Image 1 (cartoon, rainbow, N blue to C red):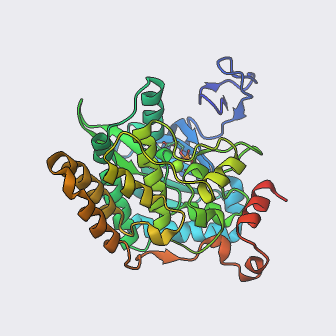
Image 2 (tube, helix red, strand yellow):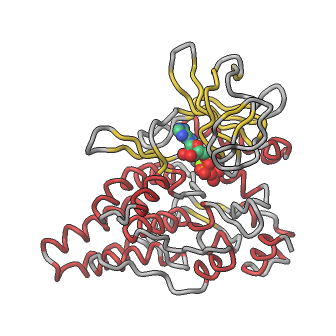
Length: 365
Ligand SMILES: Nc1ncnc2c1ncn2[C@@H]1O[C@H](COP(=O)(O)OP(=O)(O)OP(=O)(O)O)[C@@H](O)[C@H]1O
Ligand SMILES: [Mg+2]
């Protein structure tokens, strides 16, 4: 069987090009087969920077699962391999209503790493944003906070447990409909970006030279510079997502990697228009280039944003005091603090002038 890497339509082996979007078809070894003697693989959901995600059914209980099969290069690097299994053991224990459940992880007989997750019926937040923008609209501040506050709760829970997401972006948030008015948001891929960072060359999610996907739009300056990271990298990415939903365009739009590096590291941060002054000010702090200027608690950050909106409606003149209060809250030490994987190699780092080395690494020079 063959599959189109773009639209995921499957074809017989004698096809070589997708008739819908002219892409070269790939061999598809899993669909229609039983995986690990347990899960009947039905279709491919998508392909990301670390591997391919399938929808499968557990015939034992009839329930659907999402199985992420990691790219072969992840399995062949022993360090990545060990870290993946260790990280998954930890994630299996991390239960939260807004974090995708991880049921099982491991390695097949032929050496491929995989994780079996709860299947979430719905769309990625990226598709939801794209649809809204294509229709010429964006999200109101309240709508944005309603959708993202559960994600902030999930991240806050992860941070309290010493886990940093590292790859927060709209592609890693699922939106599922509960009814016509309500939707539920769920966080995906918590903590596993660590594996990608450690494998080096895919740190900024560069697939084709000069072309970028997802991650780099939300990457904090300290990640670009391979500096010490803590939970404030998630707050930076989170602020960039809030900005994007309300503005209807990316906070750091690129489009090319050098533009993106300049936007994240040097250029003035984009200020959100059409929202209360205090809201824009606080949001700007979340995407501060210096992590010390950002809020430390993601959940307090969202609650403060909400407060700003409510307060502006009630008593516009008192908003400044709320900003001052939240600035004070930002000075405490973050709980989840660890060394960026890329900077853990002391020897390498001695020769790194940070920003420049990021560029060299990205362009392979
Ligand atoms: N548990 C799940 N339930 C339903 N869909 C999922 C699940 N996990 C992932 N997906 C979907 O599978 C697709 C591929 O996900 P994947 O995580 O591999 O790629 P990505 O998020 O674009 O990139 P990255 O590798 O940086 O995470 C995405 O469209 C995502 O929404
Ligand atoms: Mg993902």
